[in-house]
Length: 204
Image 1 (cartoon, rainbow, N blue to C red):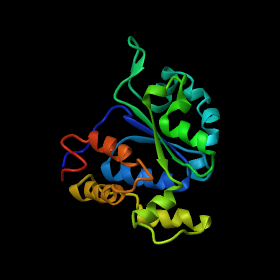
Image 2 (image 1 turned 60 degrees about the vertical axis):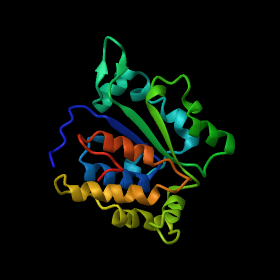
Image 3 (image 1 turned 90 degrees about the vertical axis):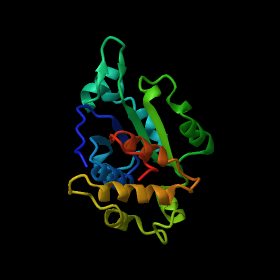
C-alpha cells in the first residue's frame, strides 16, 4: 500500500477531552493522515459545547488566513477560501441544555463564524462512553481517572507503516458504530477514508 503524501492539512478536529483525543489519534495514525487535533492541554482539559463560541473566538479562528497559517491548511488567496478541508468538532452532549444541543447538532451555533462552511459537528449522545457501550466496545462505564489508560488500550496508537491491517482496524471500528444512532462519528471516519487514494470505508 503506498504511503500517503499530503502537503496540506485536510482535516482538523476539535475534541471534547482525553477520550476523544486518543480515539482521533488512533484513527489518523492507523490511516497515516496529517490530521491536526485541537484540544485543551492534549485532552487533559475539556472543551464543552457551552464554551465553543468563546473557544472559536481565539486568534487562530478569527479569519480563514489566520487559521490556514496556524494549521497548515491550503488557502486560496484569490478566492479567499480554504481548499480540501473540513474542521470536525467532536463533543459530548450531556453538559448543555436541549436548545444548545440542537443548535450544535444542526450547525446553527456557528452562523456568522468565518469557518462556518467548513465545520462538521460530530455528536455523541450523551457521551462517547455511552456510544462505546451501545457499540459493544465497552462493557460498562468506568471512573474518569481510568479513562485515559482504558481508551489507550482500546485505541492503541499505531507506529507501523500504512498497511491493509492498519486500515482495516479503523474499518472494523466503523462497522461497530455503524448502527448506533446516538452518534454521527461515521461522517468523520468516512471523510478520513476519502483522503486515502483508492480506499473506500465500506469496500475492503
